[in-house]
Length: 100
Image 1: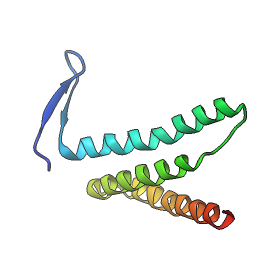
Image 2 (image 1 turned 180 degrees about the horizontal axis):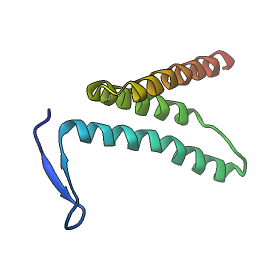
Image 3 (image 1 turned 135 degrees about the horizontal axis):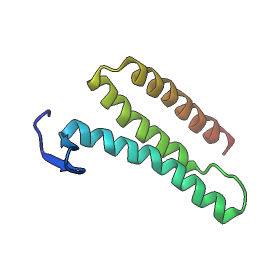
Image 4 (image 1 turned 45 degrees about the vertical axis):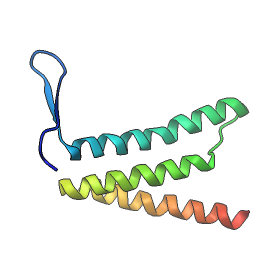
């Protein structure tokens, strides 16, 4: 999965080779970003700060994808951050489920 699929040129001297792993990393980042976007939209609609259920699902999805990517990259800082975060996101879903 390290085969270059595309080369993205960002100017005369900057280019990025897109491999499947790089794309997986970007997908994880987009998924993780979506949690903030969803939270912002819901909060604006309600007129108060709100954390919707979708926030936690996007958190878990993004975190799991980024954890996979960080394991591939063998980045201990990234691995620790994403694995600990995932535990918290799952725990929040458990607490929400108990409340219902």
